[in-house]
Image (cartoon, rainbow, N blue to C red; front, side):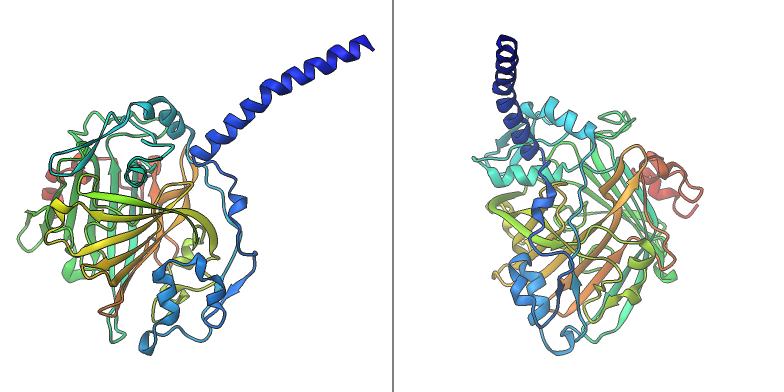
Length: 447
């Protein structure tokens, strides 16, 4: 009896220590985006949402998605339109990212300049604010999505844009992408800061492949480690056989002739930088998103409903995911001449990519919607990640009635690669900083 008492006492003492430890572990899991995603399944699997019953599910739709169901005329949804709800998927971020978060996030601070601009100091790698709380809660979430995890490089020769005008005409654009992170890296086998970074945070290289008359037109944007330093934007014009440096103020200019602007496209729906914007946290929001699909299906434009080029059920099932909703606006000293009053930005609570944005003009009217649906992709040494270079992106201009669909695959299923796979992607080494991530490389395009 005495032995049993000692054993029971030992168990009780162990539990007394274990309970707070388990509580801390659960808290850490929530802070670091490790919630059990099964709790996000707010709509039964197999539910079919149609133009007849959509209002039952509108709480899971951003305003832009609701607008799809209410707009009429030549842009009205077809009678057979469906959104099929599937299971919510789990995409844990890489261990190295969380290790860097735990190691370095305590050093990160926000500083405000005399003109109202903000900057982040002390950032090394990982998530800068794993527990975004007041003060400046919204800006902390914005910093987390700006420094979201993404592969140190992803590349693609098979990305296509389909542009639809107000009269229903559709034209296509073939592009090549090489997006490269040079600083704050959290990828296996890579240094935190590439020795050839030269002060650059990341570089975006976009070259037009089709149609022939636009071929070789290339845009290179360099974003710097210092958030207060404006990005540099260069455009290579083949007819001139040289590149031009464009004004960093032209952030509302079209991205390679599409319905997206320079402030839109990154790993999600915000590419405006940290110093010119502030954000107000509006709370958690569960919305319908798409995360999984076969490249041969989402790369085929015939698998999209018209007129809005929305994915048919054959492309993928949608899932309910938890997001954080931000009201993102330029700070007053940077607002003059800017095209938007605000951007309602949804940030995925697990990956911190921003898969949806509704943008409002200076009068506060809904102007454009950007749906940036990441398609999970396998990355060497990182496993399957939500931000892996594959995507289904649509930009809809509700006021001028035209739109762009961007997909990272062609109809045959050829799609993006990431990480080490870009060192020999279709026989080309895109891990060449001078060629694909520097201004000097633009002079080699026609060689």
